[in-house]
Image (cartoon, rainbow, N blue to C red; front, top):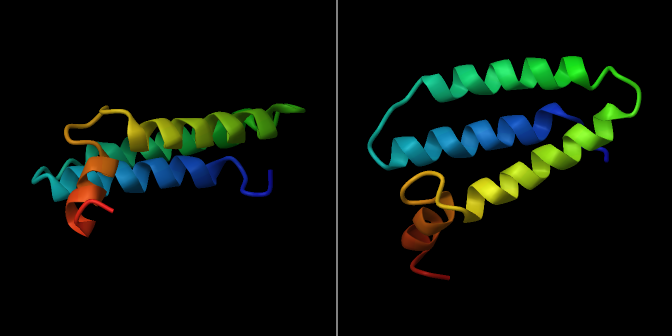
Length: 86
């Protein structure tokens, strides 16, 4: 996978932060937790064979974040509200 380990972590962090901000809560713990997760992921990816595994787990987590109601409302629900329900 060409994206690397940090890209899905930063995507999750960005989407989570913007979704919380859109919902009226400015939570700075999200970017801090994202930076810590990126550092841990970058460290673990140095183990032989772990980089593709961690990248796949990261993208699966991104898809899960988008569709599962981890945040209320979910990013996908907010996107549908913004675009008029695609």
